[in-house]
Length: 198
Image (cartoon, rainbow, N blue to C red):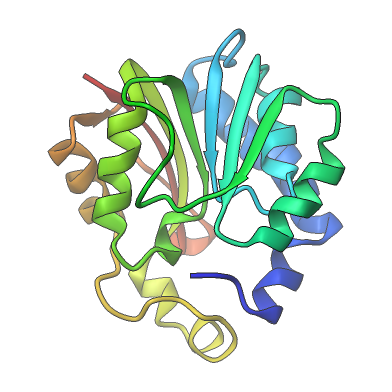
């Protein structure tokens, strides 16, 4: 699902960008056991390009391929990332255009909870990861999506949502196994983790 105007304002502001560059980058770096130096990384749901910037500048990736369902966000990302080693396109996480086993890592900055068929999205992520490849994720729980503010101000699928343990179980069904304990943040509203393709 595309973001509504409230979500766009929440995601496309300097505070969110600073949080991604500092806190989320630090979480992912620790979960990855270091940086992603020399790796080809796929970012799902690139928005205006801050995540790709983080992947390059904070996590040390060599190359980023990124896509978003919203063509206006992809245009903003193109302007932001001009001249950087990033390939951008309009795309859908349920039909990723990358060949099978073609990327070293996938990064999810809170996108999968927007996807109605999130299980299919995980299957696609598993398909494009090479054996031993890493998925780094930050996601919002079903419990948090039921809070009044989320229900009133944001557009998320209402059915078939997940808690952290259900998300981890689905990863396992697709051969993606956790590298450690899922970490809960923001009073349990968020969880972050990493999984490798076996």
